[in-house]
Image (cartoon, rainbow, N blue to C red; front, side, top):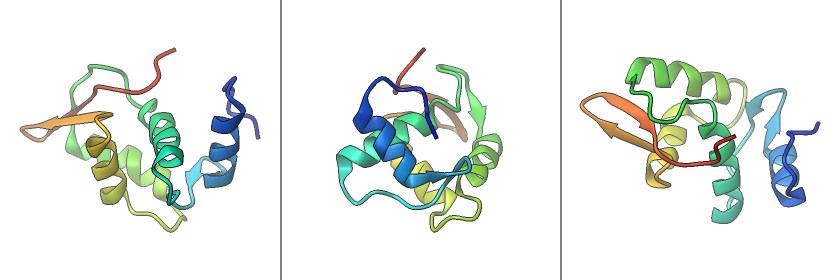
Length: 98
């Protein structure tokens, strides 16, 4: 599967950790995990405030059938400054923008 990135390393990471549109597991190495998280962060429109329930629906879909859980995924996105949280709302604050 081709994810449309010019960077062959990003393509390799995404092919390894995403199957049929689902995250199968997290990479152990932070650099690889960052590539993966930036790809997932692109699921959200930059700057749009989103209620936690809506964020969880999207992240649950990413984790469906894999070894990961959406709460851990959400925490990684926040820790990597790809999502920001305030008063039960989230918004995308980092990652690639096309």
